[in-house]
Image 1 (cartoon, rainbow over the protein chains, first blue to last red):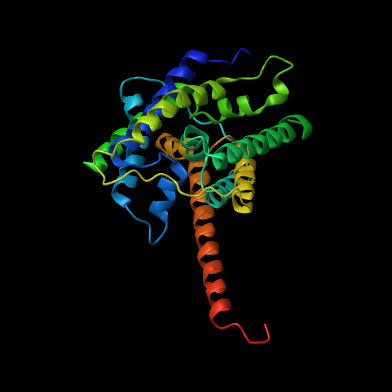
Image 2: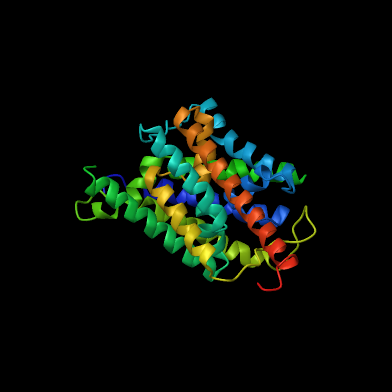
Length: 141
Length: 155
């Protein structure tokens, strides 16, 4: 397991959890990125100010990191834009249909012991693992 | 105050994704690649990220339940409990997209800060997908309402 980084994973994960708890204690909201983004996109979306502020904070993290000399990784994505666009459409439509993503279901929902979120997380993890198995190991990855 | 609190939370969330490495699609795919377990190339980091986050959110939410938020009138906990087809289908579609590139909404949006054209394509497509769902849902609701109000007598 040469790529395993347990220490940074634990520190980063704890920060994500702390941010989610703080958002509930301060503003009474779930830290689900899907819901936050969708509320900004939809015409009758509500509470745009705090949603936009959260996204600004999210974007400010890597920018501040670059300013203090922390190496921000350049994302490595498939070269085929059609694959990226298809993935984006599936993620956008799927997270809205299922009402949550990795943060909303995977962290906030499981923390509330919500059966909905536990099942959703199991399904999207399994689906993603199957896709990776097919693309990396079957289709000449 | 609410916006400022939210900005701070988003900032902390973003640093969490950055430090944990979950902002990197290749690292996420390294976790999702379970067939790499036998060869020893599997990266369990994402599981540690989730476990560490839950170690904070489980007790944190339990405490939050007993109090009102500081800058809002009440906590808005999700109310839905049904395990229905939209939940199952939505999670499956999301998982397929996630597995294709290794980006979910949080790291997708955060990576816009890197200026990567690929990420711009991903987030634009994601926004279109979300909006398409919104149109589909509102149109579906409208047609149901029409069917209920102007249903012909012979069905």
